[in-house]
Length: 113
Image 1 (cartoon, rainbow, N blue to C red):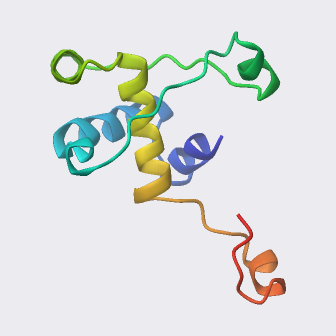
Image 2: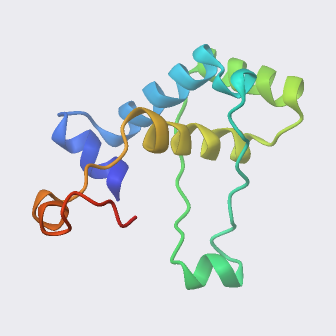
């Protein structure tokens, strides 16, 4: 939901925005500087159902697909893991959600996340 809202706020289509995040991830290669790989949970697993995970499909251009295939072969991680790690990388390190200002002020500036 955060990525969808973020893309809309910045006037971008979700697909175009996700492709840009993935291209940047593949270009910058943060996993070579210590970023941990993430393994996605299947939306069909008990945990995925309980946490309401959703499957997303991303249409990548040919060059990005080729880079993704190369990283998959080079690292041994699945495409799903690479793409999930790219999205986590963006949300956690590049553009984390801003805390609600009202809640943050009431807490005396303490982050409760």
